[in-house]
Image (cartoon, rainbow, N blue to C red; front, side):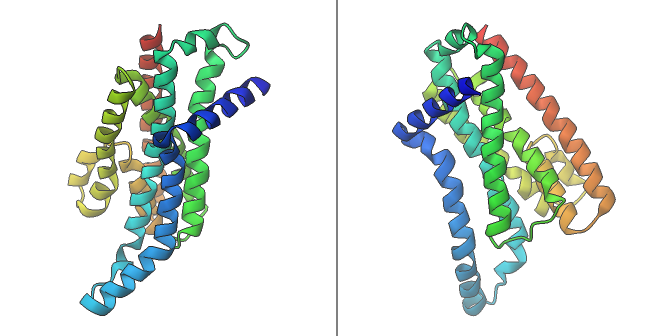
Length: 241
């Protein structure tokens, strides 16, 4: 564990010196504060002033905002991996006790753990949805999405500048909850290729207490996410070889 502890402390120092990396931690916390305290104020203002009940969309707001967490934590990790790849630090790790396998495990687990913890806190504290045991399945999909986004940046960006540009393009993946909520079946399955579609679809299935749909969405989403993660791992390893 000591070898991971040293790398973790290095990440903390690096993130503390780079405002872009700090966004991966503080943006989810800011969204939590806005959801907890800002959403009720805006909802009351719209109800009193325009007779519009924003609370009807609280579930959509919850899953839409929490979908940004794997992107943010993945972006933070992906940019760190780009720095390490450009500076050839990954080759250095390969000859240390950490080895390349240990490095890959750490880099995949870190965003997963951060995303899971932040998402769990959001579901419990935000006040936009009631946390249910079934939400653990959503957390699992989000935990896989975070390293997928990190590997997406680290595999396809030539440098950190391109990584930032790709992270903005990757932000289009937030369309998943929009497709799952607003587009009627069967047309909404055109968004099934978007990773964020499956956690959102699962969330709404849980809200509707649809037992079969919950199981189906989770299983299909899990297979999709694991397949995507496997592909991206192979692409990244090929990139650094």
